[in-house]
Image 1 (cartoon, rainbow, N blue to C red):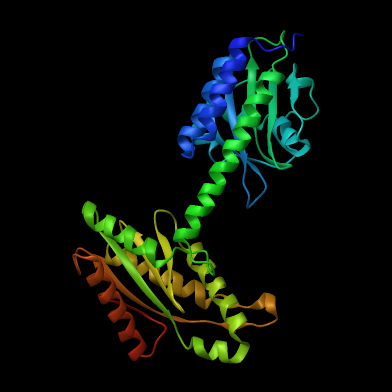
Image 2 (cartoon, rainbow, N blue to C red; image 1 turned 90 degrees about the vertical axis):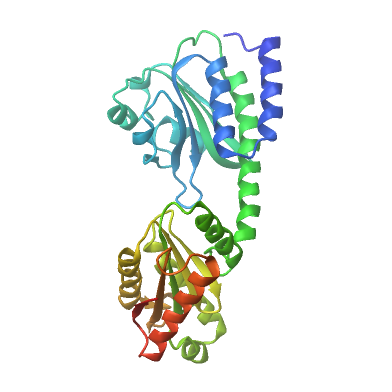
Length: 333
């Protein structure tokens, strides 16, 4: 097999490298990577799989000529299939006959209805860490060794993916609360202002304040009090699906923003969070079994108020009425 790259291939790689390292938008970045791979290595389909940092599994970030609705929920364990093996060992692999390969998994074929005959797969590695893989399925020409070309593309892609991740982290630092990982008030006011400006759908706010939380801090200390707030934030997140989001409003107060929710749906969601809290014991990992409760106030746009400050004030006032009436309940503005 011929290993030398042509002049045009080298120029294409250099141009791709310049383009990728300047790109921070994920949609554009991933599209450019696969566009270049498909241009230089004709095949039946191409995929970019990235490592999920939370689960350490490979997910299909983008695929060409594969059904996206099926691929988006598919996860591969490290070491599973050719892609998983390449990500685990950080070594490229050419499989000329998939059915004879001990690492091949037919899960994607069974889901997509396609038939994989051959595979080229290269890892995306940065700083010794696997970020993902580029996989080319059923390439049209294996007479010429594709690895030198694909490896250069993968190196540029790894740098670009790492740059994008670092940029995302910086962005998150500006809008996330350090303690809980929920959004901060800066993001809350920006998001609410945009929702009011669009004025096309109702949305609701839940203003939530912990009941008797000072007692927890006095009993277990400030550090464990902070741990308890982190666990409450996890409870809130477990009850939400995007585009709904939670906010650490300050101290032991939280706000939940529910896009598209009218008053009845918002009340049901507040009750769900309240009941989830009642069913949860907190600080168990620290040797305690602490029951936590909260008071909830609701306000809905545009039914209750037509501006951000009015909505927050009404939700806050409803929450204080719950406090005055015995706590651990939900009340609408």
